[in-house]
Length: 226
Image (cartoon, rainbow, N blue to C red; front, side):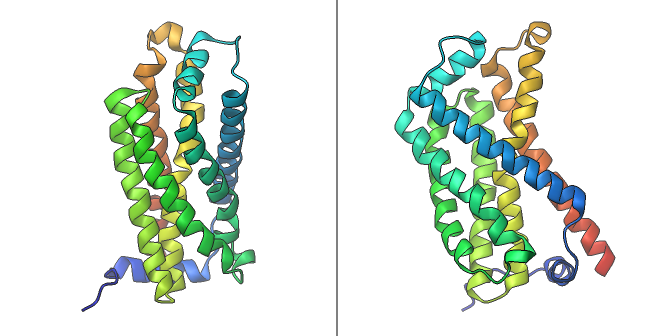
């Protein structure tokens, strides 16, 4: 019995394309921007947990207090996430293709990140809107990560890379939510939306943008090799 994932025709075509063509510059730029934002977000959160701010916008202070209410779980989630983000370039970029250890560490880290994300949803700031986004995209992240690992275990490196790109794109969606949240924060006086109301919306928008962008790139690559 075959316990490995079925390879679709489009995945096979895309594997050929991805093994021959590097990612476009605009996609690499987006990857690095999201990576830098994600790193900054984790560092800022760790500092806020250790030294809570007594000044600043009330909504930001309330958000910091929400995370401080479950400090241990927050740390258990964001520290592995930081390690995942730091390792992702070594697992995906072609200049590091000869290195095998980044991927070996990436998979267990991803499982921890995904599992703790489900747990974090218990304390969702944005209520069920945020919680539904976490359930959907966290499941998508873990599904993509497991498929990448299964293909890797079969030495199907090109297909593994495709699914790993998907997993990383979803995880970096948390970085894309940050400028969206910034827009909501900046316009809150006009919209009269509290951070509890727009937090979940920002999650849906940010994660969806990353997924759509990567899938659009994959579709374009498929069309070139079809």
